[in-house]
Length: 527
Image (cartoon, rainbow, N blue to C red; front, side):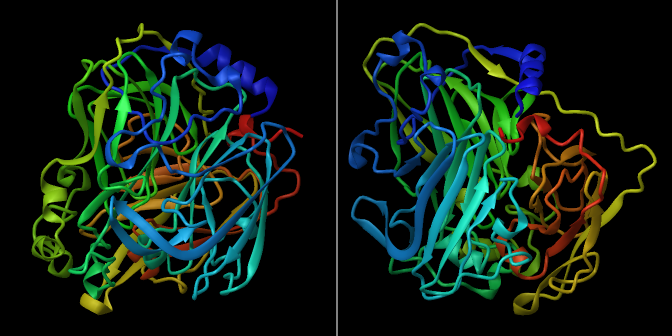
């Protein structure tokens, strides 16, 4: 975000967000890059900041935090086999980044130049895709632009972080297997102005399927049509997460759905969520919701304030999602191998048809803090002039069944889908049509888009890179490539669907003299 645009945005869109009804503190540390991002002195002295209680004890989540200085910031990441402690005494044979599940949370500032020294210590090729980051295509980690990193090899990812917000990283080779086994992590990028909250936490929502030996189950052809669903819900890699809170604290949750296929609808046992940001950063205005749907790949940021009585507990719930998905989505009527009875055999019914605990919140005995407002620098989205533009049709389909099932885009399966073409500075309008009986989260690499209309559930108006397209529904999006020509992937973020054909490429070419005045130029890096 350049300084001029930032000033204009703050003057036009500065909001004071009122306190709500509940707060959850995760087991992650507060980013300490800038004291100006912290709470008032009263709230800083309140304690209970990111500490866990019960079996886990203090948080063991690893963070990679920059020095706070602009310039080159270097991290090392290694993909290697390791143990995943799902709950006390229950360890899984897993794949890890730097030995942990989730991988380390990377924290940086807008304008930082990141250098990630990556080593592949797996027995199979892999890459890292930096989901949501606007970087050059050769650093994107997708098969369209990067050769996989072979076992024993290293690769240096080097890019500038352009945008403030919540992002994540994961493989883009055999991702349904590698991500199910633990390869994912969060990225938090701070802008020049951030809400002053008592804590800033990441909640990575996932599920894992265990076999009779309580280890990660093998894959099955029955996973192809519905996508792989697990029989354990996990948050930050834990099934039994219990976290501490104190009444009156104002906290910021960064929610990320990292699951292979599961849609999460999250809600508080009592209270509401105030949505302030989505995939590409702060929204135009806040919105209070009772619950929030996250498709695979989605991110949302919410502010909440603890109002529970001292010494009490409450829960964050995973709520039924059937109505949100439409058609024959999870919890719907039987549709062959992806149907209701198949899901029961995989142990998924209870998590899809009833409310299920994601984590327990335990309030301290401390007296409540004084309630306060939080100023959030909401940003206005520029108006994209789409008059006279003929929409590009992106039709999502499927064919076959059982182990021969294939998914399609415009009638063909990857890698045989003809590439779409765009020029730098040329506004694109895509009309995404879902002709199947199941939902598809549509993800575009490289660029943010605006959702213009359709059947998508969008709680706030903000820049997006991932959107839920319900069964039998359609969504219209618009974007303008602001640079970085090359081959960019777009695909369904149900991992099994993308791997079985629902993926294609956008070829962006340079158009000399054209400039983008509407993509989030306010978030360009500092020179």
